[in-house]
Amino acid sequence: DLGSEVEIEAEIAEDVGKDDLLGGLRIDSTAEIEVPDRLVDQVIGQEHARDVVMKAAKQRRHVMMIGSPGTGKSMLAKAMAELLPKEELQDVLVYHNPDDGNNPKVRTVPAGKGDQIVEAHKEEARKRNQMRSFLMWIIIAVVLGYSLIIAGQILLGILAAGIIYLAFRYGSRSSDAMIPNLVVNNADTKTAPFEDATGAHAGALLGDVRHDPFQSGGMETPSHDRVEPGAIHKANKGVLFIDEINTLDIRSQQHLMTAIQEGEFSITGQSERSSGAMVQTEPVPTDFIMIAAGNLDAMENMHPALRSRIKGYGYEVYMDDTIEDTPEMRRKYTRFVAQEVAKDGRLPDFSKEAIEEVILEARRRSGRKGHLTLELRNLGGLVRVSGDIGRSEDADVVTRDHVLQAKSRSRSIEQQLADDYIERRKDYELQVSEGYVAGRVNGLAVMGEDSGIVLPVMAEVTPSQGPGEVIATGQLKEMAQEAVSNVSAIIKKFSDENISEKDIHIQFVQAGQGGVDGDSASITVATAVISALEDVGVDQSLAMTGSLSVRGDVLPVGGVTHKIEAAAKTGMDRVIIPQANMQDVMIEDEYKEMVEIIPVSHISEVLDVALEGEPEKDSLVDRLRSITGSAFEGGKGQ
Ligand code: ADP
Image (cartoon, rainbow, N blue to C red; front, side, top):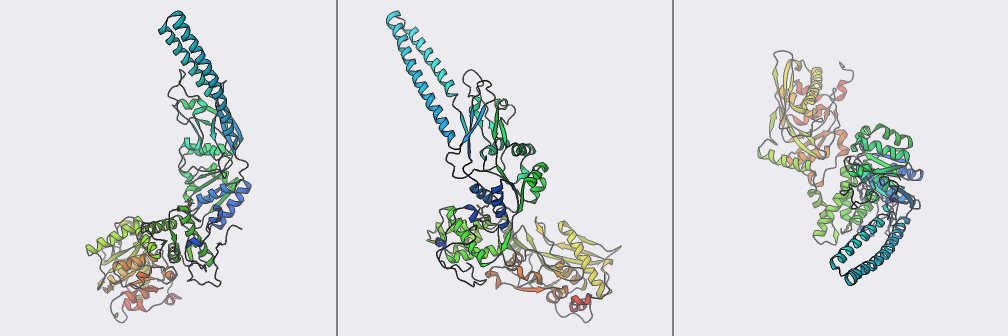
């Protein structure tokens, strides 16, 4: 099978629990882990994509891989190249065409033969040149001898000798021109070729003919010598990998199609005004397997003919972002750390505790209960930074502490921005984290992908002249309106209050930062509105996140871990999150003591926790506080 088990000398314990982060491996460090030889055996997860690659390698089919960056697409493409038969590899030679100098001839020979042929030609040319120069010196000697001794014409003699010398040089140049140009050389390749043509310009992809500044007069480089192969030619009998396929210009995509269909593609100069553009070789083989990759967007934007070509004659696979966290998987992640250490070549081995910390991070980054992240390029980055820190300290092994340092060092731009933002707001005292204020609620939002911020919401309710309006500004306006309409539906049920007759102003305090996703702030808006309406204070040492349904249910939202951490950093004491999100909470230990997490499933519970004091009997707040989800069942209905 595909190296699916981690092979080590040490024993593997049976019956491993969730807390056994190495999945039962009894090791002291990565030094004890064996890294498989074949790349395909090193791939973690991506079972489906790996099966497809194995199958496609046998059947010589093209593959389209869709998925997040750093999940192993190019790794699998390389792995596929390793799986292809080496016996079929070819060398390609380009020869001068004596009949038409602009149409060089192409010859394909088994791998390794190309070098020999070129050598043989060189040898022959050398011999010929030796003969010629021998001849030349004899003639020069005769001519010089004759002019000096017999005719007494020294100058004439030297001149004649010079002319003879140049004539011979010119002759040997043109015999060098007969040496073929070895454009594809597989003599030393250990596996079938892997060519990464991501972001390649036309010349690099399709081949090119260099410009010749001396286009005549005996100084020119013969055209066949100026021919350069493209990735499609170098990938012959191997794998051509193109990530972000949609960024390839349309013309190149069309040519790529032709190369795939015909299995061969002539090389010509790519820049129109260069002398190379006049040259076109005979067809050069392009019998490669293409692995095109990208995100979903890439697939939609690629040339439809190219896409259907792959679809019709190949496979499409989706890469997984996360994988289930099982003991076997954790053993593989242990091996992953060993693989990355081996790949880098300069890092110390990782101690058991350091590996455990990396695996914890893989859990955290998955953002999903019971899963590990498969965005392994990034996790590999953490391994390298940790290793570098260990190395800079001359440590024998990388320790847990090194990994922790690396984690705080390798923060994303968004995280750094969020930290800076929190600091600045502290300076300006925009952050209120104690006491009670009516109409003001500390919401939580996600910035970028992996950082949270506290985003306070202020609400004010004023009598309206005409029909009531919800007045909010900025990118969060729509969300605010929806939240208000949900909360007014709820309020209507429980009181005579009709807030559609009032103007409701919603302000997100300093939400001016780009990239703030406020979608999950609807319980925040609702709480702010109710608090403003009833003029009851809201606990400012509390932050909240959650989405509100029209029935008052609090629905799950994204990014809870980052949000809770942001709340803790900002000095909040308590955080309200949706009950359904409890399983996603993977905050780091240091934050666990700093904040209390309160799971809720209904807006009544939010109000109960957030609002100040005991409400007056039968007030709106009292009624809202005391309801439960079931109060809606069989109620007035919407
Ligand atoms: P992609 O092409 O999807 O952007 P790569 O294949 O270039 O990602 O991955 C970059 C590096 O991350 C790999 O060289 C490898 O070290 C690591 N990596 C990514 N995915 C995996 C995986 N599934 N298994 C093992 N290592 C992986």
